Structure formats: C-alpha cells, structure tokens
Length: 282
Picture 1 (tube, one colour):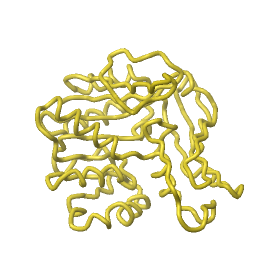
Picture 2 (tube, helix red, strand yellow; picture 1 turned 90 degrees about the vertical axis):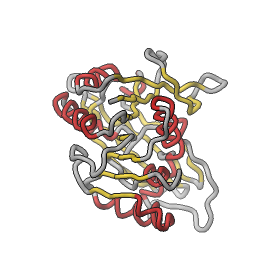
Picture 3 (cartoon, helix red, strand yellow; picture 1 turned 45 degrees about the vertical axis):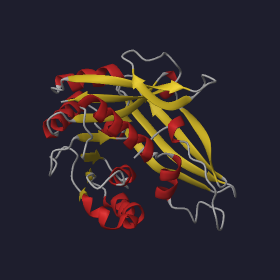
Picture 4 (cartoon, rainbow, N blue to C red; picture 1 turned 120 degrees about the horizontal axis):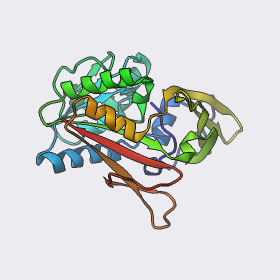
C-alpha cells in the first residue's frame, strides 16, 4: 500500500478522545485516513466499466489489497457485488477483516480473501481487476511486468477491464518530502528517498508527525521501479490487451491542484506532478 499526496484523497476530520501520538496511533488507521479514498476509486471503476460495456460490473478483484478498504466499498454498492482480494501479507489483511469488514455483517461473506501471489488466478473471472496505489511497481523488470499483465488479461472475464493508477512528472523524480495536515494534530509525510535513473529503482516511505513532537518514522516503506506511462501502456499491449486508455486528472479553479475528476486523454498535460489511470480492455 502506498501513495504520494493525491488531491482527490485528502482527508480531514474531527477526532474525539485523547489527541493522537506516535505511541497510541495505529499505522493502518492513519494510512486509510491520509491515503485511501475508496469511494472515489470504486466510483471510477464502476462508471468506466459501465460506460464502456453498457452494463454494471459485478465481480472485482483487488490485487495487493492490504486492508481492502476499496473491496469493502465495492461490496457496499449492492447485493450483486462480490470481491476477491489478493495479498501475501497476513497482517494488513487481518486488520482489514476487523476494521473494514466486521461492520458489513453478512455482506462480508461476498469477499473472498486470498493470501496468494497476485500472479495466481482468481477463483472467479473478474469483470474489473485493479492494483491500486502504484503497488504493482514492485515488479522491477519488464519481464516481470509483462508476465504479471499477461496473467491479468488471461484472468479477466469476457469484456473485463484491468485498471491501475500511476503518477509522474518532474517532481516525482526528486528526492524530497511532501507534508500534509490530515487533522487532529497529525501531519502525513510522503518521503521520496531516492531514485536512480540508470535502473529506475525508487525508494520511498510514509511517516507521520504528531502535535506533541513524536514521530512515526517509516510507517510504510517501498522499494519500487519508477515506471513511465508510455512504457506501461506498451507492455500492456504486448500482454495482449485489445486497447489501453489513459485517464488524467483535471485541475481545480485555481489551476494549481487536481480536482479529482479523471477523463480520457491520450496525451495529458505537461505539469510538475500528475496522477493518471491506465484502463486496459480485454
């Protein structure tokens, strides 16, 4: 699970009880409050599939699902919605079961947890398959990425879509930290630690700073390859997808930050930092 600051995922909210500190805070709770916006993601997935296929999707597969907040939101969309979540780390999965699914009651039975490699096949062919928050960047070679994308295409139901998000721009390649107040005296810090242009290796982390001066350093750490949009698109096509569309985020009225709305745009805009989706159709 990971992400740099996304305008569409900014979270603010009131907190009750003792003010949060590094000692009494839960890193998964902080992650979901600062990074995740499953309602926006699910809306995009459902609207995009429905627009392209003329019918609503039913079965979702979430790769690298972690706490599976997105999967839980999918289930809330209707009694016909089912999900499979794939992740090899049991810790965030167990957290997600307790905090994101316990409140769903019997609807939680429509989620199938798979503690398996994301390259393993689904139990049921998904209408939509997604790997959110750039998690698929864990594959660092073209061969690995091609094998993964190929397995995704083969796994989809007829007419299925595979959707990933990504980011880029000059700021994405800088060794820098970006801070954002998430409320309750807590600051979210996205730390772009290092990038090596010869190999594409990319090291990053998420920290949290608190009102009392305490810090939760390296709450989440990532070792990725920084992939470009055009090379990912080419690999998807080589994996056999029929077509791949890019959706770029629009800007707000001040033309300074993203507005959370994504539209098809084959070229995008040359800006310091951008967020996009790639939608690959079987």
